[in-house]
Image 1 (cartoon, helix red, strand yellow):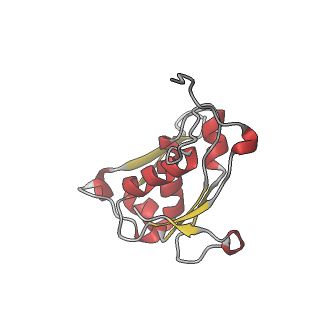
Image 2 (cartoon, helix red, strand yellow; image 1 turned 135 degrees about the horizontal axis):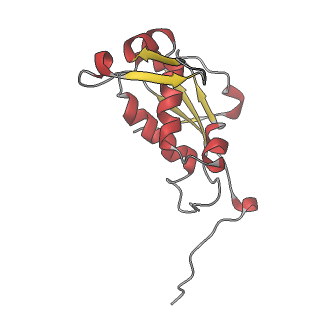
Length: 144
């Protein structure tokens, strides 16, 4: 019986392109699928300390849904670094003006908060509409 744990090597990692359609789906459900694909957790060759994930394209972000009363209650906050520099944007305003940023922040929060997570986030492309620029990569549709 072989008791060794498999660890992928950089030369063995194969990357694919996947499209996630966010139309009429909850923000968090789409973000968890994207984070899973970006990390490579759907692959049998998953290695926690390597970036084994795939590239992800999320389309139709303008049509995402927030369940419950989150549209009115959820607030996105960031700080400029100066005194009194707290900026707040409600989810309703964020989804109207910049739905790509809302999706990007949701996925970013589900990835590791280290250099591996930052590297994984660079493989994410988010579009508010149905069109995307990665046609040459021949992405596959990921159903979830």
